Length: 225
Image (cartoon, rainbow, N blue to C red):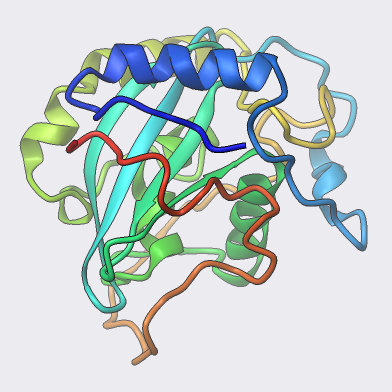
């Protein structure tokens, strides 16, 4: 089914549309895990706590082949978590649900420390407010954002998340696996940062199986309109 979204100059309307689409089953299902690794973080099995009162939608843009920046972020409804990916070739993906959870888990296992100089899609996503909700890091990296104003405008939301984290709330998104078993959806915390230059890489692209967890590339046009 083709989904119609308004340009995200009117982001509140789009958050409502995302919520409504999800409730009626219009968003594509998240992909499943073959090995069950996404089900839980063993150290936190049996958490069973309350999730954050708000989610977040992050827009990321590939400004050069393989180089991503966070170009917009807005608070969303409870457990509404999504990354809108604007590729260098002009196509648009939406990463959400278990596909998003799996990618974050895989990255955190492969990269115990955040890569300050990394510019790849997942490097930048982990510095976003989505990564912040998961407890990946507590100190923001302004270099991951197109400009510091994007980060500053979301400080109230971040303060609320920090307060709720102290009260025992945790990260979980709609479509994630392992509800109630992990306060960070099975994503490992990064307690330090690697500042060396990233290894050369080819142009980043969406993972195989685009139909699982990714929205229609031509559908959602993102915050920038």
